[in-house]
Length: 309
Image (tube, rainbow, N blue to C red; front, side):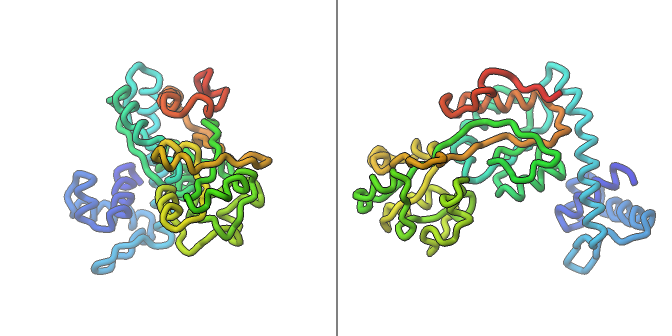
């Protein structure tokens, strides 16, 4: 099996179309088809089911393609090591991030990072935590900005910042401000986010406790939740960084939560334990330092650069 053949099967799995896969690889369709068929003959298995309009990997084909993707990613690391040890900050950087974190970081991050490191091909993907960790594991991402996963096997964490949660309530719910601020959160008036609305405080872990909150409509974004509250009454829980997205009038309708332990989330950069691009990691962190308020930043990360080895 050659690197070229691995590239071809990964491309065909991505596009599920011989012509499109061939174009992506810069070869003709007959060449790509012949090389994949030759590989199947060499391994004595079928990697793809070839129905008229439906090209899908076989069961064993999925495993082979996954391993091929890992192998291709590993070969790219040779160039990345060279780039990281020289003065040229270049190459590809693939970052994954939670949708409930992205709005507060990504717009400014793209602007500052792209201007400071114009030779880096930056790619950012929003996904839920499970998908982020899977892409990180298979080498489809270089790093993920997320809350801490439960399983850190073969992963490393670089703590970034701690963000408090606050209550946002409607004008009609303003009389309940003191109750909400005290941490007594009446479930019948609370609107819940579909994913990522997890405060790791046992009883306050809204995403796992299905007895809490209104689930008539499980919103997909914090902004949607805020609008639901404005039009329907009640309240919701929003991250501290979302306060900057509120109007001056809306900012009057927030209350910090007096909960022990505190209602907050710890946001980190997660990388694989064999990650080698130390200078690239420092570049990402330095950029984030210009975006995230200093009082939220992890104390250790704000004072030094990262050393992986």
